[in-house]
Image 1 (cartoon, rainbow, N blue to C red):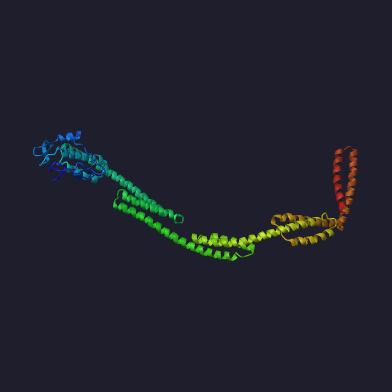
Image 2 (image 1 turned 180 degrees about the vertical axis):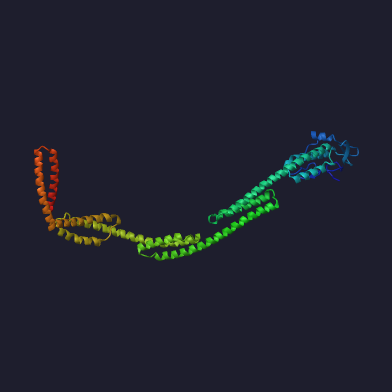
Length: 460
């Protein structure tokens, strides 16, 4: 027994009311939608479809509502107390709702899975068996029968679509596993651990998303893929632990070596043995580079101490060099002034006097000390020029006064005199004979011999 509080008294339906069908909900109330997602249209009772449906119903004198079907009539309800103004209206709306429900199911067939199709089709078959509606019920039953074939085709398509979706899901899951295995197979010595760890976390989230949103795979396949994925994560974690364990050990050893280097560097920081200590610091720096890296915190702290010790020494060395440079500049001024006296000895006219003048000036030169490196070559060359000039004058004088050299020179002068006299006669004869070429050649020989004669004469 259903009641409908429409203000027209009580009515009693006969036969099956419109029922709740999977995916296409319709209630006894003509004003309730099919679902929130897919509302059924509510046709006015006076539209053409409603008017056509009314042709299949009538009301008997006792208030019974009849529907025509299969060449006969069937009672679908009754108003025993008082007939409303439109007693067929409720049943017509129910018919239109059921018709809309069938149309909605037909439209949604391509989007339903096999289970949803079977459940909805079974519910529709039950709904059209003896519905408490007024309209062309036979046409609805025929349409439901026709939908069975479409449902069979839709289930086959859904099964094929499901298989394709599973294949795609399997491919996506397999890709996730292969990417995880690739991360795990990296050379630990070249792995970027932070990036790779994030990559595995992202892959795990993709796996969970596939489980939530994608189609379910069969249990053996899914378990096998998960075992590979989990195994890749385990291998990666083992490699990471091993890598950082070795890294910790190597960093601890590097820290120990660098602590010793820092100690040695600090011991040298106060040294004033500038040259050897600077070399020692270069050696310490080479050892530092070979020691490897400690942890960032330890390495930075140790390097700061090492650099500070090194800086202390080189600051002191630079200060010392600056002081020496200033002293050398003053020495340069003194030596340039002294060179004025030294160069005044030239030219050498009296060797012994020149040597006597130079000797105390040389002592004073040595006492002044070093000059800046940039000026050393220039200033020393001027000093050497004076020393070389005195030395050359002394050597020339020795050669000039040496008896053996003098005798040898006298002999050569006699020979040259004879040669010059002979050449002079030959030149005269050549000119008398008009042989100018021969005379010119003889004249060249004469000039050469004369030059030798003059040079030896000046030294004799």
